[in-house]
Image 1 (cartoon, one colour):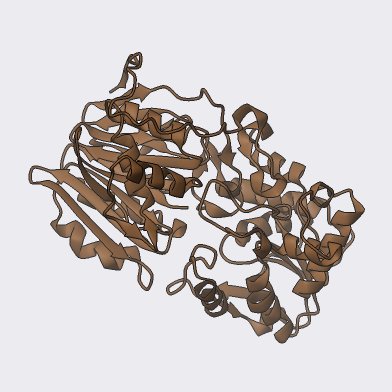
Image 2 (cartoon, helix red, strand yellow):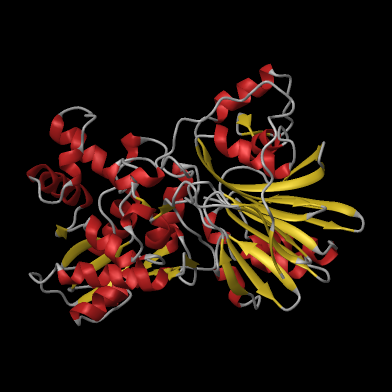
Length: 496
């Protein structure tokens, strides 16, 4: 997923924008982008982050850009921000999410005479597509509302305009947006991690489908939210989010510690010498396990932090494998002769864990490896963010295919930890990984560790089901008219 940050300040916002955006670097590895609006108009800069960090690429840019409002993005796939000179005036836009029907929407707009200039990896840039859909509205808010109705998937966005920054959270709330305030500025972010060192205090978690406008005067609600319920991604707490971040007021680090405690409570029948976590996101899961079990937490595998980021986010399998191999360094003196519980956030494909973590432990003389993922087996590719796109890549699906002799559509028994087929699947994965034992977190324990109502969480990648209260309806069709029907204006609510 991509991470976005925006700020409106009384003075030049460039330094706050630079550091606020940088605090989203754990969410993407492809592109970074900044856009600022000042007296001289829009200034926009985009750099590839494929071989370098955000700070090194944008340091010179942030020192020269001037303006009191701006938006930034760390993108997992496409170049952003997009600039559009529209009938509402010029604006820049950054987005996060995944549009499942992007090709269909693009074809429809092309048939209506639209044109696209920002091509991305063989297709239309998603942020430009969103911008063109918004531009079909009678005003920016109406355009955002209309865009929500025709997309399948999810989209949260920041739109920089002369009015200020329009912040719109996905209508089902898959991805978060949070507003913060300090004495001289207002900000909006995907990750509250960006607030602490920039001296912002959280004042509002934007609701699903809500649109707010940030300006020098404060926050103006331009469209109420919450009508479709909430379906926030549970994986934010388990893996994706940064430990210092809070979503819906619930801290990531605390959730991961609780996940580890739940794993330990169900693990009374093994004897080990130590507990560890796969760096970095597995650390807190491991710490929770150690606190509950009373076993020492140690670091048999350490990450070479200065040079390598996450191995999950790059789109290329070759790049993912290279990062996984190079970033983890084993400490033989800690490993040799010991039985170790290894806590990890999840097992997605399983190839990196098998080839570049577990193998290193065995090569260094480990006695036993007891693998403990902090979530259940992943069964379905995410429909709402850019992550694993093929169902055949998932470790659990490989196991099912081997057991059944072919792909099967109904995997319900394999998602039930009490079923014999589930047990066989876990045994197959354990053997494939080469571990002494493998026990997954149960769905109930994971939901309990998060501490948010189950019906308000998106658990699709584990269950294949959306909560009934927030299950998306089929997208509406784009109407071939320039001006959609007028809607009843929403009374603005202002916070100053």
